[in-house]
Amino acid sequence: MMKNDFKVAIMQPYFMPYIGYWQLINAVDLFVLFDDVNFIKKGWINRNRIINNKQEYTFVLPLKNVSQNRLINEHEFVDNEAKTKLFNLISNSYKKAPEWDNVKDLLNDVINYPTLDLVEYIKNSIEKICNYLGIETRIVASSDLDNNKELKAQDKIIDICKMLDAGMYINPSGGIDLYDDERFMKEGIDLRFIFSRAIEYKQYNNDFIPGLSFIDMLCFLDKEEIKSKLEQYDLVKKNTL
Image 1 (cartoon, rainbow, N blue to C red):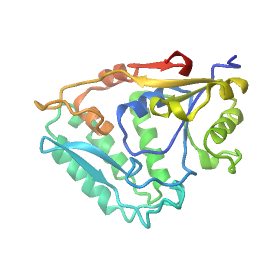
Image 2 (cartoon, one colour):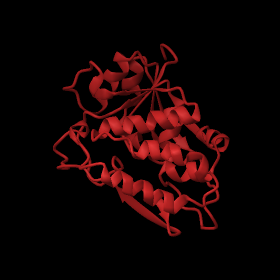
Image 3 (cartoon, one colour):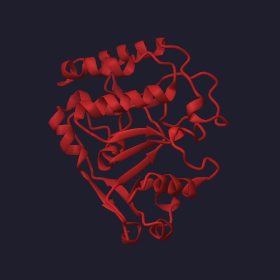
Image 4 (cartoon, helix red, strand yellow):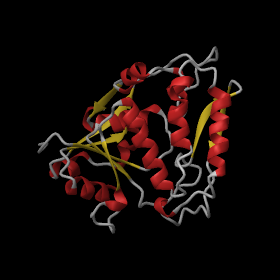
């Protein structure tokens, strides 16, 4: 039985990810950036997709000495020059989008944030976007928590949840096979999975391209439309699937 209604989610830090990530942040009271786990090459930590010249385009913010044998929080950017280039690319790609004038300063602040520290950079981007959208979820890094750093996988997640006194742990739907309902239940934690509903919106006059960076949605939809789409998900228990 759930001991309280305090909701927690734990995810690797991604830069300006797709809307499902923001729905997860919006669904919980505390969002943990899982930064003391190994870096995954060609994941979404320092790269994402936008529309450029009416086509899907993948951008990458280059890091020093990228290695899957090092933790995420042990990585830094090469320099700040790539950030300036990215903002210029975003500007050229979205300057005719309906919300560009309303979000260009926000995106400039997010993209050109001067730190070389990867996790600080992503944490800042999440906090700035949350502030813009009125999301009050607290953001913390797992490396700053006093949890058992020796545990792995599900055991580590449960340990963090217990330390934070979470009554509910919410995970993306892609992790269903990784977690055991009964293990969480024994600890008094209600395990749920978040399923995004189908979301489409007008992207110029193009065919809709799903799953793009949140940058795309910020440029095409006003704040209230985005807030509405942040609520378009379902929380599901594993044993009901």
